[in-house]
Length: 160
Image 1 (cartoon, rainbow, N blue to C red):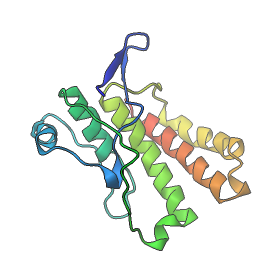
Image 2: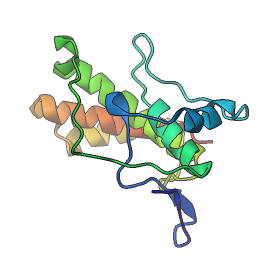
Image 3: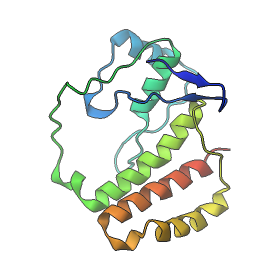
């Protein structure tokens, strides 16, 4: 699957299925083309307590732009061992916020972002509105979803 330019929207589109995360496998030559792009300002990925997550998506979009293809093979299986703390609601809320923030940024970097930027001063107001829309007080799942919306607004505020 290749990056598709959508003439109607005037932007690139992220593939419907793409390899990401722990089960991602990349040909060495494809990764080398991504690493060799000195002009690419790498987006932050997870380090320490920073839970942004854009490295795998950045690689996918960059190698597609370089002419490589990607595939998703659901028949393949992977056992991913993670600590118990990574399935706790507080961690998942922080993770969802970081992923949503960096998702907007990586799409923007590759001309695939469908959302307009927002003024930074509007972010707290949008987050407050989302608190009610997502009913964030009602339980862990709602709070995790609300944190994703918060990260989305924060990501849009960085697009200047």
